[in-house]
Image (tube, rainbow, N blue to C red; front, side, top):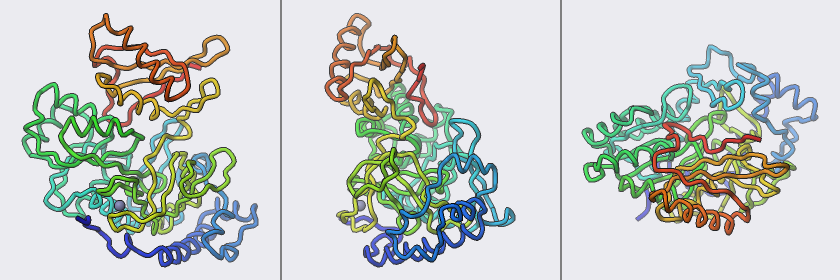
Length: 427
Ligand SMILES: [Zn+2]
């Protein structure tokens, strides 16, 4: 059975035609930022970039990168390409370090956003008959409102429960009969735990779940699916670029279809900045092709992934990106070994009896870095020692690194209603 496709023309466009569209939109964007955004005007002047020299998509690599620091240095509104009166909405990216980064949207940007989200929710099998419980936070964070508008466009009945208040989430889920759940994967795990505790899984109507806003593993996907009896789909986006709706999984679940007519993707080596080929793992760089208020040229997302251009059995021709392995900011270098929290998560979730709740504590042991993995296991205290040895061995086998595993009772680690904090760096 082929999927329903929201925007048949855009999502199944032949590669050549799409490249022509991307190129003309790229040229327009470069010309516009050069004339409207002083930051880019100055940057292009410094690097002697003239938009007339952009003669093909390949010339994108001649353009300079934009970084999160650039956005912070032009706080709050200096990166806007339109006067403030044309802005109808402001969101911001989460300020993990320092200030938040405000992002503006024009009326057309909000419309484009809803279209992009509509594509990914339809790809995940959501339709107008669905009752969708949105358990993302609503506010400056783009998750809640981003999904909300796209789902309404598809015609689904949106239940904007927002995040938190778990007893109410469960009540709504049962009484209203939500058929789709939208949240972060870590909050979905927490909700699944509450469902198990109350023994109400068989009272739920959930059939699908769309999870995003943080990296997650196949193991966690399985746990969420078992916990609710639903099919879980990954989706991706970031506030600086728009919010959710940049890419999402189709029924094949073999990569996230990226809305290439709106966002031009590249993969680069995060250290050298050199472009990498299709299939190679590196940092995702995105150029917005249609954004009016907040266009960005070669924005360094810090997210580590790969791109696959080959056609998907679902019929979409858009390039697919692999599940995000981690953020280059979250990469831990422990005694010379590069590790993403999601790799540890993957190992943990493959071991039956181990809960998908964990925390990584990095400390300095003399001159050496030490990684402690705190994880919950359903086992009596006298078996904790055996469990910790077993998990240490598994982690060593996969990561090639010695870790210290501390077994905790079920429920001891903090649960998250939004994005989980997986790493505590004490160095
Ligand atoms: Zn597909």
